[in-house]
Image 1: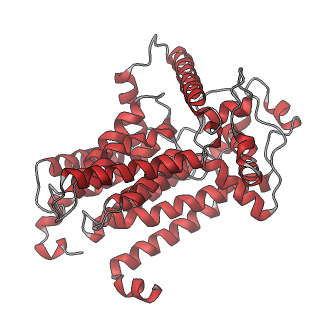
Image 2: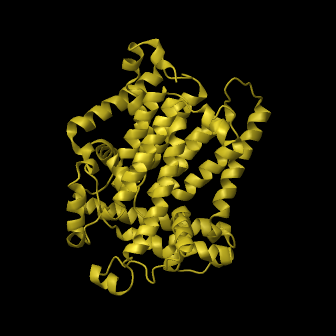
Image 3: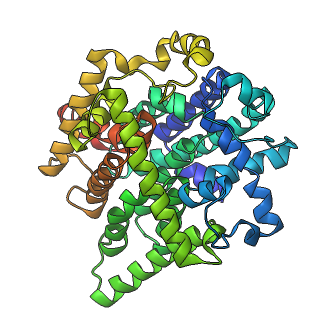
Length: 430
């Protein structure tokens, strides 16, 4: 099997693997230089759910009692995949869990005294687990992009994604962003296969949702992927069957990985949704006060999203509770130009223009997008629109735009297609 795979690889594929190998060296070499975020402490603390799940998943189920405990609240509003990844890594390395969750009302020294500040070993193991997941996502991302772009442009897209300052920062923390990049990339790879399996695409969507709930924006692209098959005509009955299998697979993965909902599913879903809505409203109000705005409306969030994607330097924290405690590590981290290259306005502007050109080129049916006007290109379009809308809903915090970065890198590479085509028809071969 391995020999067959190796024989199928051309020089561009080997080049892409070399890029991922170099990225892995870069990622792990500076892992502990990434500024600490208190949410990492929470993820490490809650990673005990991995061992609790193995011992008996019903211990994680909600009994229906109100008010929610702090741990029940996390299980109600947060996706669990990163907790399980960190907990598994801790178990394999015999690394202890944190004894206490981070208290945002307490000072840095108070949290450290309470045992909420992870040791270097705890933080390293947790970040390693997330970074490995990020690299696995890049392994799926390249062949997904190569389905609709020439190989060299697919490599360019891979480099843009892998070196994006927001990936270098948030993707290497012990948080949910690395798992989310993996989920999005795995979904795109599954959805763009020549022989599309509804079960596999549903599995991919389910994993993405368990990384972060904003992955729900991929649902329209998934429905299209299982409905419109390349070079096949499907009856309404067959399409309905494929959609059913797709939704069933996604639903099963979400249900299996979230035992919080097992005992009282309806009440737990209702409580979780209400808790999330209340939290988001309070966060928007607090963020509005910081910005001096009465309301953080959609135009404000859209402008912030574009700025964070193309122009803003990496944002190491969202609130200023611990600025003095993290200032030195933040300054040392940002001294490396690789960690903030997108804030150079010329580079950011060029990437924005390339992204718009690539997206417009595909909408107009431009020659050169392999499978243009086929489900493959439409899946990219729907994935872009879905993630854009999903990201617009919460706060305009920088790390919330992570699910958009794979599609932004794709469209930026696609923006070079008009030039690439002019170089000669041979360049369109893979």
